[in-house]
Image (cartoon, rainbow, N blue to C red):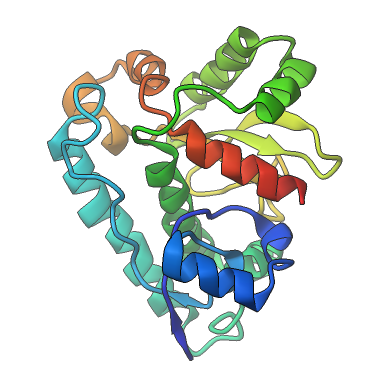
Amino acid sequence: MERRKFIRNIGLGAAATLISKKAVSNELNNLKRIKMENLQKPEFPSLPYAYDGLEPYMDAQTVEIHYDRHHRGYYNNFMKAVEGTPYENMPIEKIFAEVSKAGNAIRNNGGGFYNHVLWWYSLGKGSSKPSAGLSEAINKAFGSFDKFREDLGTAAKTQFGSGWGWLYMTPDKNLAVGSTSNQDNPLMDISPIKGIPLLTFDVWEHAYYLKYQNKRADFIDNLWNIINWDEINKRYQQALA
């Protein structure tokens, strides 16, 4: 099975398959961004910043352990889980569409691998606010950016146990927020929320415990200082395509 490189914009589902081979090649060479059709047998992606690149809101030790042990572990276990199965050559969004049939090893490790790529690239030092188009969609769905921030924060803070908070685009092209447990995501057929992921907050304890201990709410509140809106804006535009 051909190995394909992971680059940046993950989570765009079927929308990304509409991109031409030439466009994909150009972005592979120039922008280094993730396309869903490159999720055949992905290589483990590079972290888009130094371990201390999210200081002071996320400490370097947490980023290093989270990325190089937890995330890498999900990747390795996902590769092992799909090897020799019908899912070995299947794009990951198609696996998620029938993940209820794939077994827990593929569900948990595939979700853990995929969700963490979304997570790392959601963070950084991009633009400080949503684009005009995304802002309009946020206002339409939630009434205001402050209400959106409150709703997504609440979804992440109140997720019982381990899981993720999500901003996602619904099948009818509206924005919504919600949460999933463990390593599930909105692309999975077993998920209580369904759509194309745009922004995610990791609320597993290993994402924050070294710095914040049990103060998940403080961790979530501080994440708003390091969201890479450039990346989220691009995901939104491609999800609309």
